[in-house]
Length: 79
Image (cartoon, rainbow, N blue to C red; front, side, top):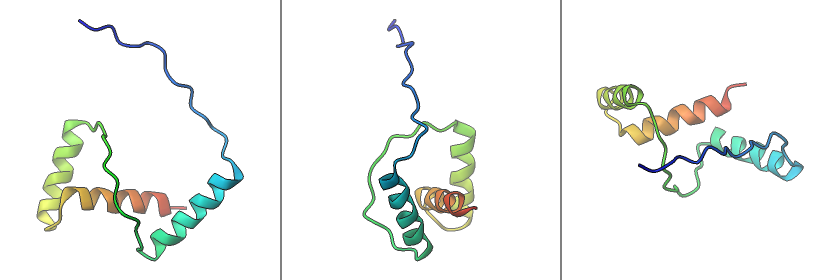
């Protein structure tokens, strides 16, 4: 059995001016529905959430990844 690494990475809480400008620019682009090319990521999601997302997406005639992106965009645009 492998021993899990008990050391967690510290989370950086400060945002540089460059990151702040990039964030604002990305929000502006999201408002206009202009997206950059997609990037593959690995994301661990509880089964019940993924199952619910897939069912809701199917009911709306969408792909679940597209619905997830809609939710992410909506959450980021919330003020």
